[in-house]
Image (cartoon, rainbow over all chains, first blue to last red; front, side, top):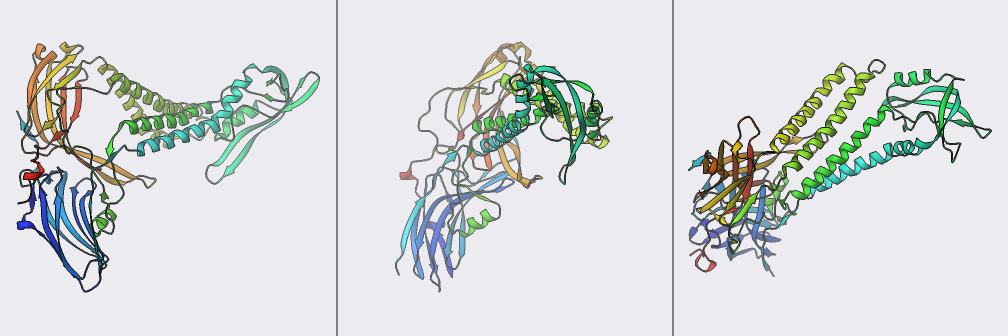
Amino acid sequence: MRMAIELSEGKLSYRPRQLMRGSFSWSSLDQLKSLELRLFWYTQGKGTQDVTLVEMRRINSPALMGRERFEFRVPDGPYTMHGKLISVLWALELVSEGPNEVTRVDVVVSPWGEPVILREELHRF
Amino acid sequence: MGQSITQTSLRPAGTRRKGLVGFGLVFAAMGGLFLVMIFGPMALGLIRSRHWVSTPCVIVNSNVEESHDSENGSTYRVAVRYRYQVDDRQYVGDRYNWTVGYSSGYSSKQRVVAALPPEADATCFVNPANPAESVLNRDVGWEAAFILLPLAFIAFGIVSIYAGIRSYSPAISDAVSPGGEWLRRKVLSGGQAANGFAGVWPAPAKDRGPRELRSSTDPRTQLTGLAFAAAIWNGIVGSILYFGGVWSHFSDVFDIVGAVFMIPFVLIGLGLIIGTIYSLLALRNPRPVVTIAKSILRLGDSVEVRWRVEGRTDTISMLNLTMEGREVATYHSGTDSDGRANTSTDKHVFERVSIAHVSDQMEIANGRSVLHLPERSMPSFISANNRVEWVLVVHGDIPNWPDVKEEFTLDVFGPEAKGASDADGH
């Protein structure tokens, strides 16, 4: 079983409202029940984890091998961030049902092209 | 082989937290049920017998009746029979007072029985409408003090319902990952799949202009709530202490172990009293009103902030206005004795932007400044258990008196995103 996610031009960082384009491919000796490509964000850190699925593309009874293009519109937020208590992280995940397999690609959502780093207390005057 | 392709977009959704309301309803209902079942008959009897006719009677017999079960051990009641005469007709009554059922404390009941020997003269109270109905003692027993217990349940329930209605939190929806391995694994290992976060994205399309911020909490409400809680709590604890202490010489209920056990309850009661006094003093505090020049705040914005302080502004020696960025994480921290999950919340201030720091009396009473929001930071973000919030803190220092402290949570949005047409991935 092989699964892969490829993002156009190898791009791993997206601004809010930007289009995320790419393709996903698979090949399997066994018939799969379904394949799902998901764009989601989740939290990590001290707080109980929250997970939100933002976009999903599902293929029921896929062929033994194939490649599909996808296009997701990145929402306004939340931005990828790393804080002292909380981190917000984004990922694309390809999940198969039949044999259950997962492959994922971590991406960044931020207007500045990189995660927001919340530092220790800052004082601005 | 046929294959179908579907694409789904899942968008944020929010809902009111119903847990607190449900919890409060259960508590209030339990208190109400307890009140009606235990104290209802007692109260009804006391009210009805107020106008019953006092009638001479003679004690037939009396004894302390015991009931025993494995959970509560032995409990007791005064069992008495007495005879009296109304309109040349003899009646026999067997109601000592309006207390329902059995209770602990053998010695106290034994003293009552000792005062009611066979053939002793006594006075009972007879229902003139139905002379067969009578009671020997229509006074309120000390057990009536325990009426505070169901009242406390009802009060706690009402407070929970009120807090539930006022609170707002984002939805934790059903799992949104049908068959999903990673999400399923995370959900099973303690994470929560939340279909959405509260509406901090996107920003409203149009700025509605200046926005006035004033505390939504009436200090009198806070004072009333604290005073009520202090009265109920200390009423219960005081009753237990008082009656336990008074009856200790003929009851084994209250001993040194009980006294030590009561210490934390007494300390909580003292804390509530101190809180009430603090709130009472703070009642006279001046109250700040802040006006932000824009209704939509974005990172990188510079916004005019005006303030005025209503009330005795001359008491404030120093006024600080600060914008704080905070991370707030809620997590499970073990379980309580009933196996329910406890949650704790941690906060961390990652950014503190000073807006004003004034000591001049004129400026304290009425002033203006500019809030410079940082350009690169995290906008407001709310999910089920985690959030980033921006809070405008007004702190007025009053020497030898409770300080003025108000907090206003503001939605701060990210920089305006470019339109969809020029924002694709190429």
